[in-house]
Image 1 (spheres, rainbow, N blue to C red):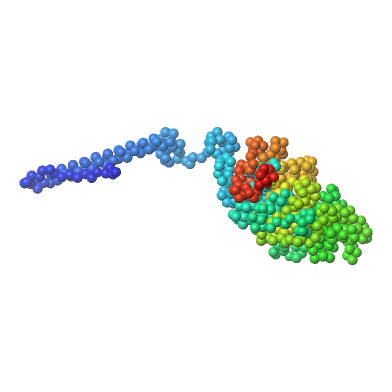
Image 2: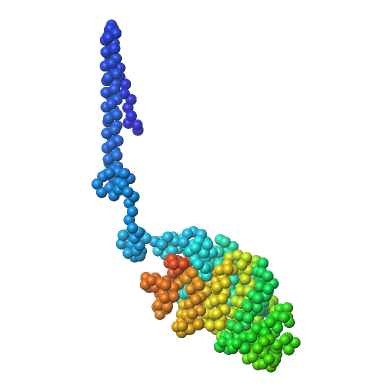
Length: 502
Ligand SMILES: Nc1ncnc2c1ncn2[C@@H]1O[C@H](COP(=O)(O)OP(=O)(O)OP(=O)(O)O)[C@@H](O)[C@H]1O
Ligand SMILES: [Mg+2]
């Protein structure tokens, strides 16, 4: 309702006859009355406004800019205080409501941040581009059954939906990725005793666009040689002698020259019987010497082509790698989880798949090494894994290693040993480390490796299934991975525990 009132005046009585002077005087008196009334009205309104402003001023705790009053906290000069840095624990004494700001809403939804109840999103490529991460690799450790594989399975599903990312699982030890890969429209290659599929780990893989013939040949040779050396060193439980190195390289080169697709049996038979039509390489003055140098190697690598592993990796591949597929896994569960040859099989399958994803133009891809501890425990296989880790950034691949505890990688070798240095280097080359529930005796190693403070380390034994501490670059967030009903069905590894046999 308006408080403005219009002021008017009129003479109540005008004499019938009045002189001009009287009329002038009467009108002047009327105007005077009117002016007085208006002035009074304006004064009343101004007083009302001033009273309202004063009331508002008193109500406000902090004075307005330029306002002068006692304790106004204002100064002619800009008010500056030196930056004060403190831990959130101390700052909590000043302002209670502090929470990690999150990593933004780009990427796939993982679940909720436990302390803020906010949504948590993650995409290693997005965060790499934003400068939060220095590489897209991920390490995940957690006790048996803590939900590690389920986390990555849900990530793979969501990454496919959000960004069209692809996922490869080179060694699916339990065959647990099969339903998921099939649901995504991918391909599962099952290899094992009695199965018809064959994988040739010496396949050259997919050639990246723009690589010269020479560079490509060099890359293929290095990849094959690295695999053969790792296998031989693991089988012999020792490093190769220099003459053995050369003998192995000669056998591989000869196998590649004499066959369109070299196979492991070609290399093995050339180690036992070098090709005498080939000129002798410098350092070997007779074919007998060359044969002696390769003889033991032939026996070591012979394991791959005879006995239990025969028929898995010793023939031309019966399957082709299709880079257009959304997901691919190599199911090696038929071999039996506790088979001592499992690390060997995982390495061959990984090598085959790694050769196939060497195209940097292949888009964003996850390479998931579930049960990576089986490889990380073995020095020669770990060495090969590390070189793959180093390549990740250039290829646009996010390598994901899943294991039970960090001591699988670092404590097996003594302090100062090559194995320990390699494992620690691998972990250092991993910008995202996720820690699920850990046993009390593992806390110290985990805290040392990841660089956790005492609060973070203390929470690890009490983490529930599906909840983990995420160290993303140098940020820490506790995240609960939430699964949809469909995802629970696809990630269920508890079937054998269900009484109804679900
Ligand atoms: N966030 C979650 N919400 C609901 N169920 C979950 C969650 N995470 C895992 N599970 C269920 O818990 C079970 C065990 O999970 P998972 O197989 O991922 O554990 P793991 O840590 O990989 O175990 P292992 O060490 O044996 O490989 C699965 O049946 C899975 O569906
Ligand atoms: Mg698992």
